[in-house]
Image: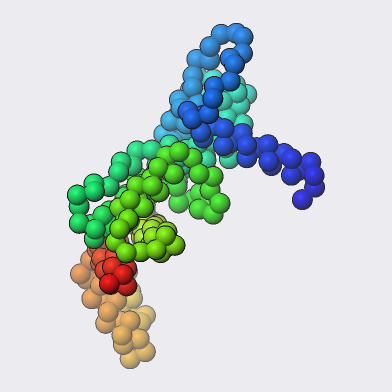
Length: 252
């Protein structure tokens, strides 16, 4: 990486960290002039609302500025880029996740880790478009990780195993949430029951029973039972229970 590009990337990363942890860092001497009409929190909240409605692809600095009644260039005084804004949005969403009640049985606490991740992704589907790799940790995501660790502290897992358990539960919840979001989007266009009415008879004709005996039998049973290609909610309940029971069995 060229030196200039490296310096620019380092400066941008530092700026994002400063914005994420702005409530914890010492306040800088204020510049002279009128106080800004908005705060960074106002900008992030407007961006989250836009992404919830239109998705991440249509989120632009200009669109957020328009929603707030500002010129696009004015928004750069609050956030340096769209990438920085998305990092702030991810952390802001995580801030709404409260601690997992400590008085719940450990099995329920572990299931809650996955359930809350899944619910968050379904409520904010644009999160599925954000790369999970090397995300910059802000105070809200760090606090949630602390809550997740507290939920499984003392069950007999090593520190590495605790982190791995949370990662596995998160990955499963994310994959299932992706299926649930896709199912909801498809149902908005055509109901699952109507889709099966159209597709079911066609599949029966083009899938010879002697060539796909198991796929035909099981697929037909699934389609008739759910009136849909799958059951994301039921699959989540089934899968997360198996995962948690497997983790606890390994501890024992």
